[in-house]
Length: 422
Image 1: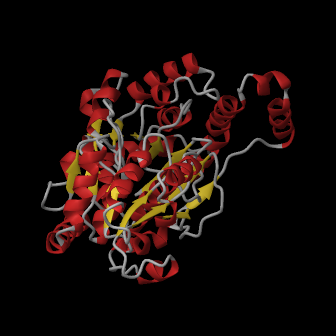
Image 2: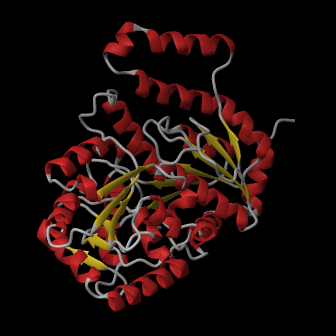
């Protein structure tokens, strides 16, 4: 089959290092590995990461005077003072996508459109209707709710109205976590159209066992027991709680180390907290690392942690949990949402009470104190993830859903052919 992947989110860098970028690339890579042809139409290709560009990347942009107009609008004092740049850029991109994107899709003739949900992202479902092909929408977060109060999210009423219309119009809605399923239906998605397909890992990256020796040498971790975290330093990640739990353990074991891998807006705050807790000499910040090196960094950890506070509406599907497990490590994770469904406590991981520093410290201590249990949990975790939670599994489910919706069937092909210019 031929698949058009659309990402109109102006803040998702397709060739970047963030989890959202990895998600786009690994899913499209897996579709291609299954024998399908895929092209990506995006708002921001980027180009900072080294990865296998298996799918063609197309970036619709304004031309000639249109480009001049957009640049000038972004400089307007009224636009800047009201923080409208991002919202207007999103709207403009969808307008271009509806025009130039239609030309691209008519030429390429995809069997279906797969779209990553973005604020103001109406063009994908609109193009699917115009071309007579199925539209699948992937929802990663309740974006309007998530960004409520954010100074750069200004056109809120427009975004909410479009959100409901897009959910209703999409043929199939894919959500990454159970809470998102209920939320999507409440926002207009038809119950029968919603499928739960969690995050996953790349077999290409994680199938081979990683030793972690080079990372341990680099950061002086030989002979040290190491607790770890991998991810973006965002407010919803309870790195603060992890630091406090680590500090309580470090008082009894000065050879313990904490390896923090990643970057984000809360990283400097974590550095300050480490100094305040007087554990900065034992806490190592690596910054962002290429996705292909993630297994080595996780392998250098004895106990990787998935830290979260008490979150009533937990909609995340933590990629780090699957990556820890795929490397064969016994993850200590907050007992929230999908973590409770994937991790079998005491058998392939350890769950702790979200936001409870003592419970987190107890979980880390329990795993560290029993190497045989830790090894058994890690082995079971790796077996589970590589069997059931790979991007290949996700790609197979997506394509099967598209087939159920009619992609590739004679009637659908006839509609697409009829829309071709003569």
